[in-house]
Length: 289
Image (tube, rainbow, N blue to C red; front, side, top):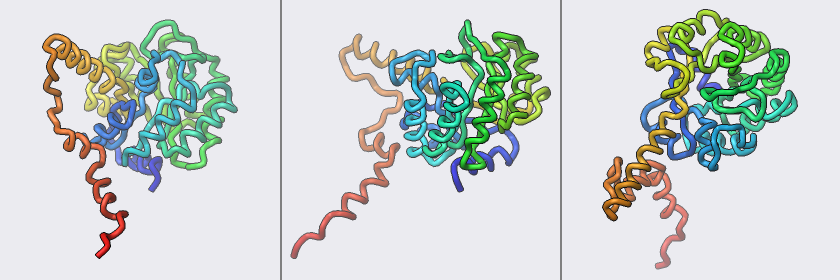
């Protein structure tokens, strides 16, 4: 079963699929080892690993390559941020093909102008709904794997209001999207209204201290959401942990005790050492008598 088919099967089981955000193979493997059924490749975190803010400065190939590394390192479906599709309908077709051939289970494409920015920042710009629908039609037509998930994200709430964001979500579903992603509803009432008003499965973006009120995954499930992503749950946590460790090192001039107090061997086991160690003996020539 392909990664895309596994994701579809998870969604068919009902309830809410939670996909914590990962920005590299370390964080992706930790998500898998924690028992989650899917992982989300965060665009903001990916940009940060390259030294950039989430301002649309990362290219399609850089994003797809990172998603491919994460997909190869884990056994759970990967849902990836594909920004705006990186251009017009032709670019969207190539974007879908590039993510798909790297083993990703699904992507989301948004209606911001390019370069875009994080959906929880100010001063966003969205393209006309006709251009957005054309991109979604192009994305749906480009799929080689029928189960590959096309998620249509709209950032219209911040620019044109809540009603327009719902209109765009439904237009995207009509154009062939498999799931709708209304970015940054601004009240709990709006969060609850999205699954009622959108005529298809919905994704909720859970961003700490973002524009959307804090909603538990249980509440999101009760509201009718099928998928929840938590892009920055590890990205921002790592910033805090690193700041604390570096400050202690600067202050004490001794190696701080890590939050995960692991030996080197224990740390490497988290990333496949027990699978690689047997290969040392397997390919060595037998000792001569």
